[in-house]
Image (cartoon, rainbow, N blue to C red; front, side):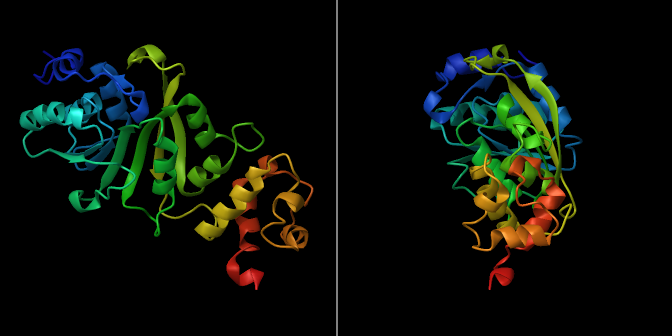
Length: 282
């Protein structure tokens, strides 16, 4: 038995026939010491509801509950895992809700009471898309106060990258505009079943009360996407699709049109995006 009185995760997987499915981006974490470390990195959970995506057999779910989460709402697409999660529900009455469904289609907010933290070993195939959705809600501050998420190390580096680096791009800017984003620690392939071919990493993002610099969210996203979609080109070329007089607009805010996207700071991108807002294009 484990520290919570439930069977070891290896036994749970065997009992319920939960071989990881590549089609679902599954790689299960079996080490409860590691999952508890992830849960602790999310901060004090005793007064928070926690949203978890892709709990699988429940390793991180158990860790979140053991570390005192007020309530966990877990979204799981794989119906093979529901019975295993039901056993955890029985061990923690009233503290775990399981939603069977696709996290890209489910809105769990009705079942969560603020403050809300999101903690997840995200399925590799939807991790980036979920992060972008969480970073780009209609209103800010968002419903959540922090994100503690596992990604492939390459994605984690993109989230936390500085200007001038190869990893710096759209994800870096979207994350750092509205959050304090830090890489917490790496997780090697051997920690998973089955072991992936890449190293993973935990990233922690705290939501800022307001964005670091003024900008329209949709416009900033559009400008950043256009700039990095052709990151080897100068801004005067990569942003021309947004406005025929892009070069003049870039120069107007004191940025050389010959610079490239990876050279611009977050503040410069925010200044630049103001020149491409719908009102300025009329």
